[in-house]
Image (cartoon, rainbow, N blue to C red; front, side):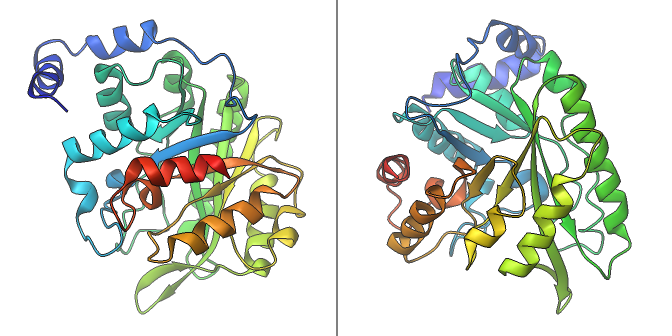
Length: 290
């Protein structure tokens, strides 16, 4: 980011807060939800608002906003990348940078389950609402729904996710649901990444809300992935997860998942924005080639 771009963002936020809504209204909407290959390739960047700043062996990698914006803007500029998922602060920085014309924009809705806290499973909706997503002209909203059989906070999160699915459907916007079966292990929330757990999580996620007409799934790659996607007819997007030292193995797992009948694309953040060799463009281009 050039110094003048950074100063322009800060100045707009300080002196012209209305510029955000103006840029959103002037944004060129995408002609389709899909890229030229008929897939979705979305860059995920909503981690910081949940206090999750780690990428690989860098504990605060996502804590430098200018560096993060540079990486997102570079990823969005690569052929085949047609969208971004983020919280309002990041989306609005990108709007002020002029980086979102023609791109699918998905607003992140519940970020209240801060990483490492005792209330992590009670994942309150502290981000976008369905009404604001529609008013800003974005294409959908995303929610995280972790189901912990031992944590009563689960039911409040499920109820809020159900209301969000219904609200987005009323606006005819995508409701992207990221479901997991989760447990506390040594005091920290861990997602159960097995086929049985994901089949259960997908089955629950597909049934929330007053209609599933606009519901999509955001799911990880696990063993026996065929069983996971067979649990629902909802369109599915593969999430990237943590940064892996074995990038080739990660790409291969995505490639296999993308061959499954309901899988429509990728939603990847840290694995592409902070690859082991720090070559964002190469990592993104490889992902697009899948």
